Image (cartoon, rainbow, N blue to C red; front, side, top):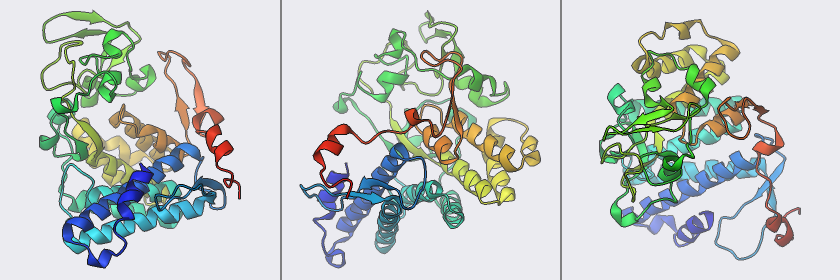
Length: 377
């Protein structure tokens, strides 16, 4: 993906001569390149250690290998790319919403980069950026109906920031996110290999929290009235992800539901997190309460939280809110927390893994070490 963005970026050597349309393409490419490096940093490091060599940097579609660069240099590239992307969007006046990467999505990327860096000045910048997205982006927090409404209405979900609308032309089926997650789609879950919520995490959701209704335990009753027993260990997201065509177990052959990559709830949770980490607890509580008051009737308990207790609550709500959306791994890692596997987990039931457990950080591929002769320069 980085090579693909480099192919685009290298074609725009003189930004001052670009048309509005070309500047938009360049802005998206720079934003996406930085986001790919952010994902690599998240997967291949334990955190921000400025002088640790971690990844090669490629800013052109070259055929030769380059050596690993220090963490600080990789972060400088990401921040530079995202800052330049934002400037391009501002130059062309294109700061509006849309399903693709845009101005506010780019601010979201930059927020995550600063949060991952974790220095106090970086946390303050992340707080400013997420506050801007919340106040200026025009995105609305999901209502109770939207929270139970499935991931199938890209153009009508006011809380979605970055998404992809899927159609029959995509011919997406088994080898897809839905093929892994959704019992109503032809795939692994409908055959019994369910991807479910940790029992202990489920138990931490109060019964008066609307998100409890996103999941059912064991038995699924679909729209035809048929009952399917997936086992008492299975806590299945039948009311979070489901197709527009209805809830029929194994009823969808080709996916026409939509993919969501970023939604405004992330920015509320990230804003609360970075404010808590930087010591601005009043702002952290205020933001968290705005999110939570839609989900449960009484959020007054948040007022009594502080220090580690407040940050733990924010991470907990991140795990609940964004379950199955690929965000908890980075949240736990950047907060140096512990991964907790549920008692209903297949391979490691009731196990805990600290963020620095070697099994939770990807290793540089052997082929890279063998073929990149300058990696250790």
